Image: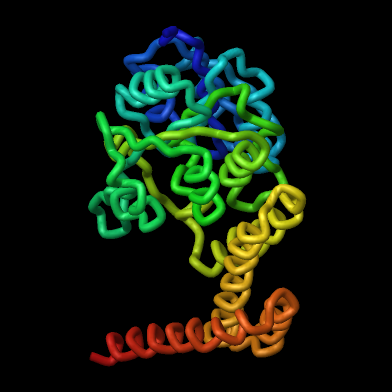
Length: 324
């Protein structure tokens, strides 16, 4: 067993000069030291370039015009020398044994990828134990052994069709398992799309640990957590979901297609509700519902009352809270 394989750490960044140093240092301070660290600057207009070049001479730095996190990660992948790839977002921090634990599991069991639990900041100021609260992982928790939960191919495939429990900073993967890299057409879910492409193309095996091995920091410019919920619905659950249905058209089973189509329709109905109740845009709300009806009329009819009633109830609760 060779636990000394080179790991390439790709850190995409955009205007993060204040948070980037802690991310870089968390990579440099890993107990697993056979690493190549690449920072890809996605068109920053702050002092990111100067910071990396002056303070971290051992870190490779590449600058590109702004094109989004997927294009930045892909540029890093082009320069990757390691057999193992890990992508660390520039606002996140790995704990000291993140790579050691992940690489050991990846190599010992000859897996395609592994991912780890994390501490996530909340707006209230406390921290959230994320994976322990993920309903899509609950069916597999009974399998825990030596702090890891192994997933066979059927389980991996079913899980990632339904959900993506592994944001970029949580996952370590084998370079040979990557098919075409991060999808630059995705608005938010470029990492989810990359994992799905791996899984739908080959029989991937994976594992995850509930041990918290990194820290996710939240602010207003996070690609996912920094957005309004309506933007997440519009970009991830509608636009990205539709793009995945098209991209993986020939690789999905009928059941998998149905699952993705239902998520897409729920997104359309949810966004229709938002535009009707929040934006008072009846015309666009109607257009969104028509798009959902075009996929499946019975399912859309079933979802409309559920989503709209829940939305009205939430709005009434907020109004009552303001009046009391």
